[in-house]
Figure (tube, rainbow, N blue to C red):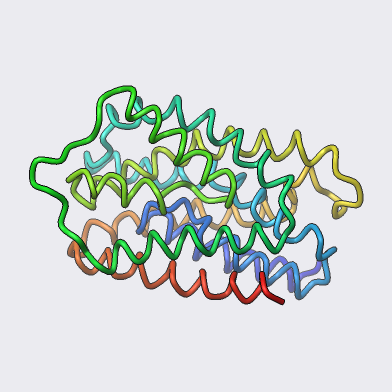
Length: 267
């Protein structure tokens, strides 16, 4: 692999790992746009760039989420009962999301990504206070919420934090607990989503060399190695920052990346 490409992916992996620990977003919200930039600069087949970026992003989250959640768990911040209630729906939805994405044109996929993260960011910036009596729903509602979160995450190649963090904070879960719990949810999302992307990608011709389905293995290796080292640092920073600052960081990052994906979609 090109040394310049390796260096770019190492830097990207380090940034993604830190963001995963800091914001509980699995890193996908950062990884998909930046990996799209890198693959475009390296002249990968344009009709496959978005799909490969999304699939590879999901695969890296399997490793990043483990590193991130260990750091959050050590601080007692992960709400494991919430993880258990959301995980079944998430597993199903995360398989369905890539199936939908495999049938969408790249421009539509990029615009879908941008719309979802713009919505999530706007909710954070408005900082609307949930009703004091609002709590997380019961098991059927959590299964449904998990299915929606998993489908969206599998579709856009993210760890689900762009949906699960706003959902939990809307239900009066403290932001630090929402971020930590979202990090734990990243693993089932990544596991089912990666399996789905490999399966549907194997049926697609002319993918880049060293790909397993839609997953680009060299990028997966390099990004994962860097991200697992920096995810605990992000988790440590998350617990040191005040709630409002964390929400603003989350929102500004998402809006900036949404803007890039809109440009990518309309070109």
